[in-house]
Length: 157
Image (cartoon, rainbow, N blue to C red; front, side):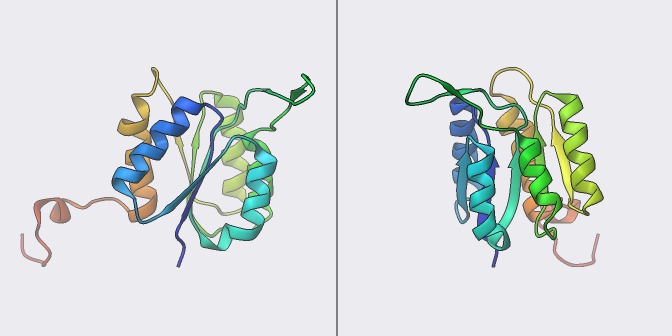
């Protein structure tokens, strides 16, 4: 059974907020957050069949290397291109303010038949528990029907 949620996010505050939200609502899943596209792709090579959800940021900040040189961590498009060559196994959520890049990532993944949604970050972190988590919930467990919310389980009104 798929039990992993895999996220590409380089901002430490965002990653921490995402992890908190997932621990509160989806503690049964293992959460792995990556700040480099190559590391995420390496992980997915082994664990893609066990993955229930993939979340992708696009723009990743350059990282300082041990020798003082900056290291390019890649982009979410690198992961999207990798996934496009794989059979779809789970839904995905793109969370980036880079609308042109988001469109490109969505196109390549949808063409490969991946189910993809896009969340547009806003403000500081408030979008994570409000919009992102709601989208994650829909992707993982499906939309909540009116009957489920009201506690009815039969066909009666």
